[in-house]
Length: 208
Image (tube, helix red, strand yellow):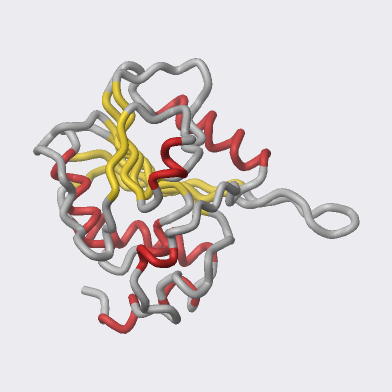
């Protein structure tokens, strides 16, 4: 198990206060968004029920793929109301309560996009995601090299991008009930005059 100090944050104030104001910005650039959408096209079951964990105003789901149900679980209602992919929304703080308000085996897939670095109880949350997924359903966790530094957990800020992939893989391993844990990354391309494309990292597994 991880030491508790790993999941302390610079700002330990109530997360609901931090997320009161909508932040309708994307946290990865267009190239990374396109890469993620194509990856999800290959991994997500069309026509199924999808859980969008730590949801916001965009889910970066692939265009042209229909899902029967897309449930956004997040912290800001205005953001999720502006998300065209969602069919339902739930306001819920996973750091306050890692237990998910859903039945066992309710979903065909789950995603957590550019937000895993904020979880203070990640093993408990991953265990709960496994509970609400059907056997064989994927849980896909993606991230880049950006974060709100005051809300990211200490272990995330102490490690590099390769170690972030290893860390998320450990979340799967320690929460139990997962198989085929895999990781993939697309390195960002540095521009001639600085800047460039964002890197994209994906770690995923399927419910045993």
